[in-house]
Picture 1 (cartoon, protein in one colour):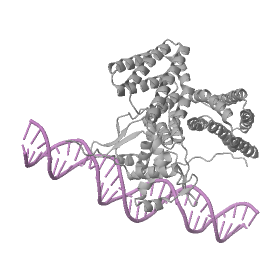
Picture 2 (tube, protein in one colour; picture 1 turned 90 degrees about the horizontal axis):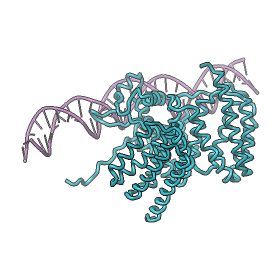
Picture 3 (cartoon, protein in one colour; picture 1 turned 30 degrees about the vertical axis):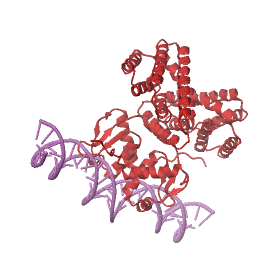
Length: 238
Length: 238
DNA sequence: ATTTATTATAGGTCTGACCTATATCACTTT
DNA sequence: AAAGTGATATAGGTCAGACCTATAATAAAT
């Protein structure tokens, strides 16, 4: 018959505590890098057993919100990265052959143009400063493939942040991270340098709000990546 | 002196056990839907304390690999839900005002048309069977708002699965779940019935591979939802 | 036949003990 | 002075065993 209520979700103490702490981290009541009380202290403060606290810590750990070190000067350190759980999920699926590089590509091609468009619309002064400072940093290490690779990834992260939609941001970050791990786990200086140059062009189009031009350059960027990826995959031993 | 060994990463028993079980689930040595031994039995089998087993279970739970029920006929059930960590992340952000319903809307509007398009392209016989069985179930409970609401959500999940891209699937699942929780946590039979009828139309367009018509109906679906959402929000006390 | 106690099950929580890795400091040794 | 050695305190890691609580199934009562 007609139900008047849906059953409400009962929660374990460990889950409640985990989301309690998670919220404090997200609200920045607890800052990234700072240290939580010891397990024993948390148990006393929260008036639960240490076992419950530890279960909560396992949850927070697996969500990427904390990092734990043993011994004196050790403890529970806040290290929040919103997109990490997504990366972990995707990584597990990739390891298991449930998703392919093409799937990631598919998704990026579907929503990064939208990000570019929004970024071009919303571009603020501080965003442009961020981009310029990124480029300056990169040019100062123009012969360091590791550094350059990271900056090339960071570029897309900044664009995602500029979209103004945090969901797009974290999805993009996760996709880039997993892509770097499963597909671009190699280094090629010339490649990164060329990529960097495309990014500079793309940034200029965005800051000048030339949306069409920006989209064109994004596809150029992606094509360039894809070509390089296919080349490097074909030279790999099976 | 040259180091002969690098320090190896020590892992808690709980982590080792969690990935042990995770692997078995992924390899399908343990099937989804089946039941793991009881906590006490696992502790005995693995020769660790029950506390360790429970911490492992918290990890597996937060990764969406298991579901736990109390009491007799209860226990630890395998339920690979890859999108769970994403839902949890988004939920937390929503609770803390870091993302809004509009953000979720923005993302859905951006990539569900793509899903619809791919679904219309890829629609297989078994997909159509699934859709029809969904509709049949829903029509058998056409006066139950809870049941209907769940089926209306499930409809979009099936479409996402039909896209053939698991990433789109899990992203969509997470978005729908969070949307249902933060925005549609109320019940309205007539609304759900109307929504259902749109879904039926949409499904027909998709199975007949009428992509344009399908997209049009999707936007109708979204408009309908948005209207209802705004109405219900405006009648809520601030 | 339906409702209401009863009971067994399996997860949930608590207590308090002991183990173990590690940063620090004091003390040698070279 | 530098480097190795050892003691110590810290804080997480593990364990054992007890008791609490929700729930499905069964039996008893209506």
